[in-house]
Length: 374
Image (tube, rainbow, N blue to C red; front, side, top):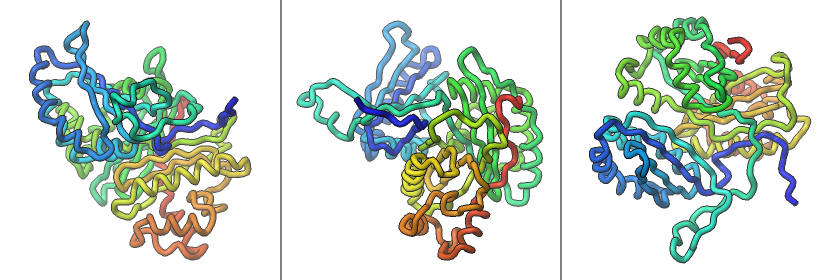
């Protein structure tokens, strides 16, 4: 009998094959237009590295409901593609046909198939064991504001009224943490239940809408929240997915004072964002097995070369910079040094340089609100 770790863990880096399920609800009468747009895109999707196959399905009960399922060799190539500007432009023709969408991503654990008839299914590997979850979905958004506007934006974002935590019978907002690194804003959210339902719930609240409208003049990327296409493109580009999460076994500390929350911004060398995220994920997996490690939990968010590591610490962040940075040991520090943008990170060859980098990487906390605060 296999003994599974009691720690909470989710990861896009386990190497297993990925199944993506995209559910779509089309506008009335748009079925043929949607099919024609999909036919023009399918060859482009088939040429994406890591893509194995996909199927387009139409409901036999409701012709307005469609389903696209795709198979990928692993999660990283899919995430690199779905978060790219190429993807944003590629799916633009579909937007006028679609009323609503929902995307689900799954690692493949087991399958029954005829390998002779479908040899492409042999690509990639299956996840060996199920991971232990906590029912929480983690996601983040990031965007930049005009240089010089940071104090005004921070003041606006810190003063909003929290929306109701309860979304519906099965969905609840648990926590929202908002940070800034220079002119970059990162908003991390934790949701119990349905992430999409929670995001829609929040976006419809008057107090949230007022804050979003208030920061509009300061955004580097223009958006019009009254224009569905403009809002969709903005939030697609702002998505900063959680690619790895791990927390030590046992209940979460009841006292907010028992742990302190920090977000560390890692300036990745151009083209090495995902490699850096993988390296930090491996370090956090190892640290979770050490009962003496002061890191209670870690979530890594990554998109292109933007890498943010959200950590809950049992000790002060600066007590052990290497542990806090996720690079214990000289070899691991050397790897981290190679993956960082040297012009931003510095040498990292002395304790002073490490302490300086950690202090710079520690993003400014603007607000951190649990559900009980709402």
